[in-house]
Image (cartoon, rainbow, N blue to C red):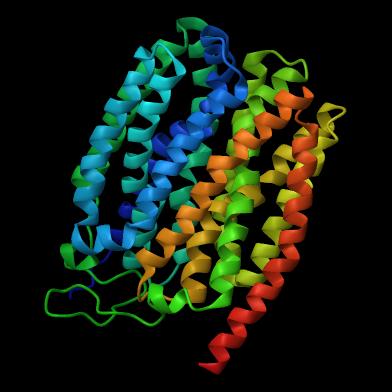
Length: 414
């Protein structure tokens, strides 16, 4: 294949993933907290009932993730992403027409299925195909979208809800998603570097007669499932995702409960996502330079520290400290999972193995915010929830250190 000068097309793939994260994942997964008070008051429901909405989305994403290996071995990643990117904003629009929470749940199921088909697993698969070098940087830049998008969109969404109501806000966001994401999936994304007559960033890999890379080094899903550290890694993913999702989705109502105006709460929530955006790029570079063990322990420690700050938020200093510290911890749940998957299990059956990892991450996002909301409903405060997440991830640090040693020893023996 010809090596072309200038910007490698792989970075346009990264840009497309960035846009999907900015509009789809950010709006669907990171912004529901902004609607929480308005929707619960109109429908006369509890906060935990509303946050079950996120659970439905996460379960639907989990179903797709569990079958990702089969889906993306039979169908083009580009075509799957293209179709799902068209359906998702159409479904999201119907949130504006919902008359009860059960309609929300039904719409969320469709949104979740589409999110799984154009979200983390296919995007990580594309980056793995297009990058043999600078994978951490590419992953960080791509997944920065959810944080940067939130920093820009959350204040706007907060003002829209106040000025035009939550229903019109849902409709406006649906149109925005369609207009900005669909061109990326239809015009830019390609399955393989060979589709553009290129090699991956960092050089070529062996290819078969069709131009698609042959099986790379690593394990199949069946082989990975025989490794004890595979089954240790998955629940760690769930716990970290639960804590991170709780922090992202409950910052706005938490700040409101502390006595701040809703627009200030939205701005602080946006700040947390802005910090997250920068931390994703930084974390990708740290993975490239320092490796998985150091970076994962550092990220989990940040989750512990951030949750402790929220639990101790007797004044704004603790609140701002929690927002800043949380960046590297929450970034781990998007940047760290795909990098760790390839580090431990290789590229051979990446989509299938990472699909399992992503499904356990979806379990975490499904249970995290509802658990936090149920604790709020029972106690009238989020403090006990923050304390619980700090303790859980503190224990997870030591489990991960043991897991890393097991995986490294297994590689040495093989």
